[in-house]
Length: 159
Length: 121
Image (cartoon, rainbow over all chains, first blue to last red; front, top):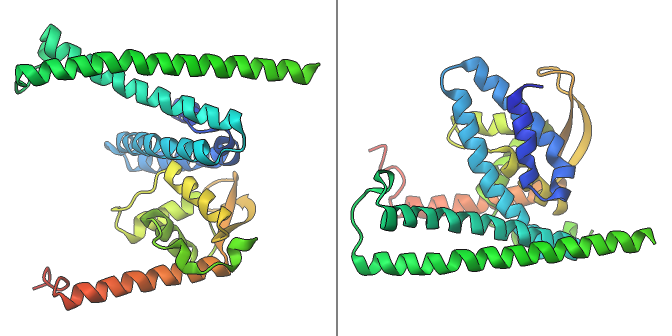
């Protein structure tokens, strides 16, 4: 198996376990077929395959987790959907926070662009700066609670 | 299952991905990559279904009994890896037909408002 196929199999971890178990093998096969065909055609096509696949993965993984959250088989599966969506939200919040930090505070050359008005800059920074730790805090608490619960259930089963 | 007796209209409108998949399967049973190629070919590459969108739609349409799995076998055109094949159910055909009629009525409305044919002129 080539590295690209291995990497795609790893990325499939972004999907809920139930979906992955049902369709993961088929999705990996489809990716391999697509990659082979585009590689054969040459040029920048393999790069386009990756861009398409990553965009598709981002969109469809969120969709599947949303579905798991609302129609999951049990609290464990629904909880995992919630944690996953919260992680994705926190990652986006952190990215925005990093961008705001670079742009407003550090004035890093990478963050240079048309200037925002001072009021909106401060507002943006305060809101994002306050939101990111809250989101992270909620995420960590939920994650820890679920891990502890899972451990308890496992122990209860083994008794 | 109760859904099989439902009115096809309750499934409308289909998402573009779902309708493209049903259109592909209306031509006969296919595996996932076959569906993907058929859709890309029919739309001159304008619609490219990714594996996640493809199997997410397949999952929902299988649950709704619009399509069904019809075995696992290798595709002689590709390799000896076994692939799952899917086909349209009778109910799926009715849903696809209802969606086609819905889209046709939209096209008629667009034609009546002279929105169609403007590009050719």
